[in-house]
Length: 284
Image 1 (cartoon, one colour):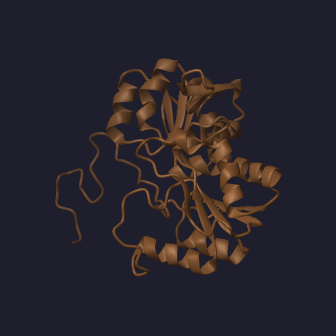
Image 2 (cartoon, rainbow, N blue to C red):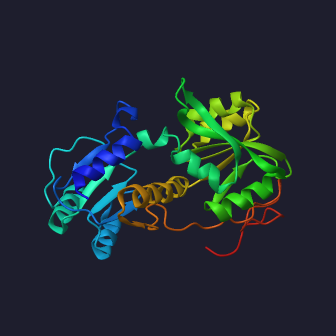
């Protein structure tokens, strides 16, 4: 299949017109008349995933996040993005991106996330009128479970998670949104779900959401929330285009490790190094 033919097939499933006005999706670089036999799919186009594509012998990279979302004045090889562009051109690898048009598609990014949790009767959280498409998804669990058990399920099925809510709280319905989900906190609250799973939640919006009685929150990494969708796209490309696919598991999250917080002293107890008597602590 030619690059141009594969682009046409992808855009039948994820039309670029579905993308937000600020987004930059579609065919980014490569020769339209070049042959495609293998596609590497990744959340991000960065030096690590590009080198993986080179090693795998891929002819095209399909990524969720745009490489050139914001305007650039140079693609010199000495720049970060320019270096990626030059490396891909030299390796003969084309680049295609589906971002917010993949978010709202049916099936789309959040459908894959909902499937990881086994949610049933899935529907859009923020529907696009009369289309069956929309941002996020709402579904019900096969059986009710405690929030702590849902957190364990998310951890094993998606990735590490931080949680806000009563551990023993009963969860029956869940809203999910792949990627940064702050914008849909109010929608999750209006939907009356018991929990909302997303990524990149910020302190103040989350705090206010909970203070207003909103559903419990589960926050995973941005990469982890969107990685499941790539398996769906890969299956589509294999079936409809007959190409080989490789889904990258290179975690492109900027965070590389975490350290658990030290136990906090009980209220009124002296901080480490303090003396209960008020005498000066020894040492430096």
